[in-house]
Image (cartoon, rainbow, N blue to C red; front, side, top):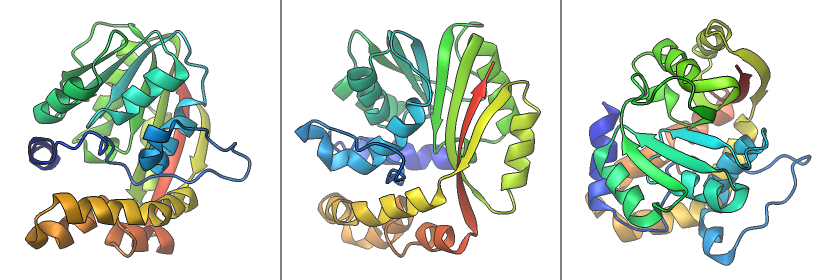
Length: 249
């Protein structure tokens, strides 16, 4: 269901600084202020979701796989700021991959089309797998987790952040416990996501107004998770829960 949505967005809306699709994140009090270059300030809140997940591990000099890399902003940020040896972005939407390669491909960053449930890589090639706000769209999360374990090197990490209904959180926790990776940490970051949504509101509304046809703006506003959207309201009420996990092989 999600693939044609992301294909259309990448095909029709080719704005370089619109390089993230996540809800955004405002750090907790115990997390340091993130210093960004001026050109990255427009994406501060979605960048912070990536940054404070990726910083759970020292990834400098490591080989990274970003599954569900979308428009490429997360992989580009990680490469420029956190200095892995190389980061590969994988996404199911071929148009998103083309867009990401157009804007962000470099000696240390590349993007490929492929399925999270059938990773097109040999065994034990990555030190860290990152997965941001993507696994809720997969047909089989256990298959995804099995594939992640297969491509991780011994001692590698899965860093995962995603949203679930309150009823589905128990299932996700069980899937993670059963996947053969060791759970290092689990955090409820719903309040951080709510604040990210609210603080990014002016930027989101401007982008929607400038890039989305008027007749589609109400639908896209729900998809983007603006303030007052269904996702925002359900996060506030606890009907939706946003979790951050660190797992080790």
